[in-house]
Image 1 (cartoon, helix red, strand yellow):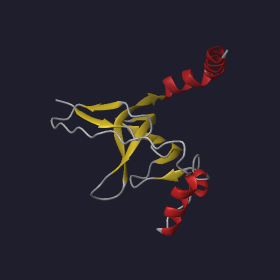
Image 2 (spheres, rainbow, N blue to C red):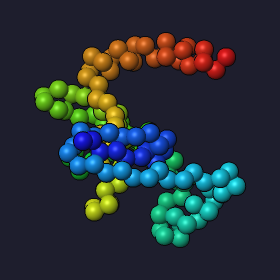
Image 3 (cartoon, one colour):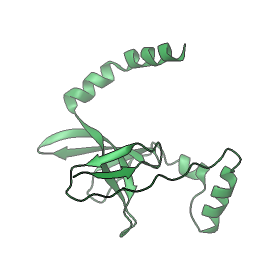
Length: 137
């Protein structure tokens, strides 16, 4: 049976084809009255980064423990360029924090594009933008 987790960002089920089953309750969304400043001050008090300094890290190219280049799209999503099975892949994937090690690890939810698929997506970016604009009207 598959493993089901909740995405901290948008809470859809994540299903993994492993043999174990884990169901985590979704985190409750905070009300609009909760301040981001409280979060930032708590992180700073713990020695962590504030949300504004963390935002500057988004899009910055980093290297993971396996030597693969990646950049963060958000706190829980990243784009990694890697080789798998002798092929270069553009891997757009959710990540989670491993409780045992504290490291960010790739989740099952995501997709890996071959170079041909990546080129096709890039060549159709204007079309995607037009379709998005059509939804906003």
